[in-house]
Image (cartoon, rainbow, N blue to C red):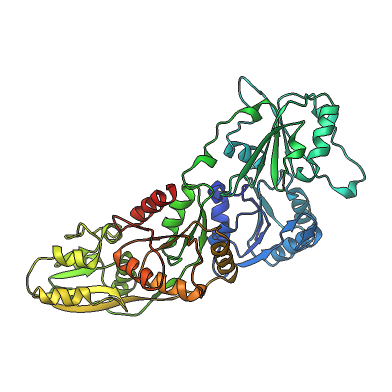
Length: 489
């Protein structure tokens, strides 16, 4: 097999290349850096070996020599190894050393370039490294050279006069020394400078100064330092997104959370995923649908379970639903049906069980209600009052999800310090299991609690939470809109 040196980009998971994603999904082993976005590890197979070799200033989980040996050993075992590196492997990423180790050992390797922070951090801060009227070239240099090579080959006096834009990576700890050297080399002390910390991440922070003042601004690692007239340009977009700087807790099941997380990340939020529930498949058999007038679905999870397990287990396909009419509790459920090639005959205006009952016609015959193993009895009882014989079919169940200890600690600490701005709940079970996991009442001022609908809100209030906003409509889109309106206040 092969060792793949994959550039993960500077922090935003969306900057990973398609080739990088393809390799991550197929990898047997993922060896990752401190600065590689941890969200990308979710792309790896559940059985993949994940090895943290992160290096931070002054400490290292593993030396470079040990990393080289690890890559060679795993590659020689015939396994597909992804070496996930922050930024680009060959831009101050020591990818060259790892490639040399593979060549020396006869292990095949491939390089997958990544987006370098030298360009991306500046771009996310609204600074183009080149601009037709300002700078027609840019130079990238490291501010942290190998201390074992016995000297420096960086000529700051020459760089001071090279013109264009100068981008310094890994230079935060030496910013005062670098600025002084550039001024001594001939750069004017009024030259604009910008330092972008955690570029492309939700906690990105940009400091703007000059060569003469940058040393007094407290530049911290990791920062990309941009020197030149382009640093005076302010084409900011990333830090102006509506939820930038806000931290939101998502309690939805991990199987469902990607849509909500993606929406929040796109709006600039830092997302802490603390899934309060998990979706557990159960075995069931779909009855003969020819004897039913209606099939009612109460969630997208129910649709997926009905098709992926029930119909498959019963050796049927979507044509089995041809004789019946289909009701969906809301647009999310209807969309799940549409992905299966089916159109719901009934979708209520409000997306709760009570509204579905109001819209349901009075009639007779049999109704198959596909739902979670444990659910409210509002629908079966209400349909029975409308004249139907109701048969419930449990197609999945929810269970409390064991919380990740690190994320749970961050949520607790964030609630105590006010670092968490909002908590979102998408069902009563997410409320109950979140409260059980956290184990303490949320302190005042309480983070904003945003609920997907009235039933979830009632559960939250029963658990002692103040509900600050409720989605209308009761969908993920409605939840995001309610969250934005609340935090905008």
